[in-house]
Length: 252
Image (cartoon, rainbow, N blue to C red; front, side, top):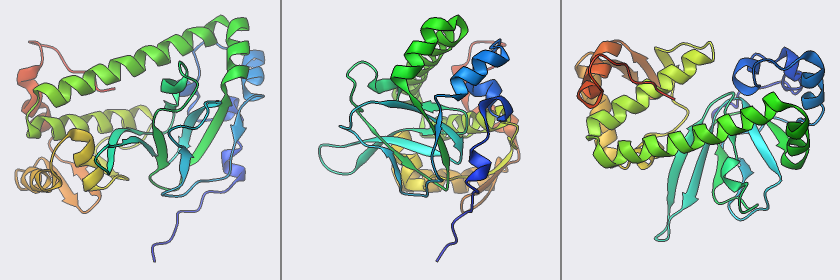
């Protein structure tokens, strides 16, 4: 039986002002007093393990959630059975924004590996946002980012080949890990091949074949869930024809 990664409860009770994710999670320019006020409403739960639910579709919306450590997937059930993966979320990323309008979660969120999650009561956050302009601006930025990511995903699924989809996914993951001070070229995938194929709209056999092909072509070193990007320029070249001339794609 695989051992669960141990995360100390004390280690996830770090105050916002001392958290390594501050630059990603909080708006720039908050003064110490405002950080203390925000920290006062954040709830830090005990570590969750792979398969645990953060929230489920149909539940009443009360909190936004910030991934502190580990990773989470969001998904929705399919009418014909199974699920549709909507996204994979890394430390510093906020989930639950889609539930604000209807006040009900329209998708579910499930932990992919041992993770720590910060809960932010939305009603309290609204109150603080009305008093702290930079916090209100951060909310607008997060909502805008959510819309942008949805648009990018539609473009990816609608116009890209299978090779471009996987290359874009890996480059996006690499870029997001780098922003968190982690290795951008060497990482373990917390999601399964099936989950990746579901997210990218491809058959799992296609994903497995592409990983093997990318490995054989020297783009990646792949050993089960371990991935090392050995030729990032080669991955970029796979999708370069979809970029504007002399521009670099931004992976969010």
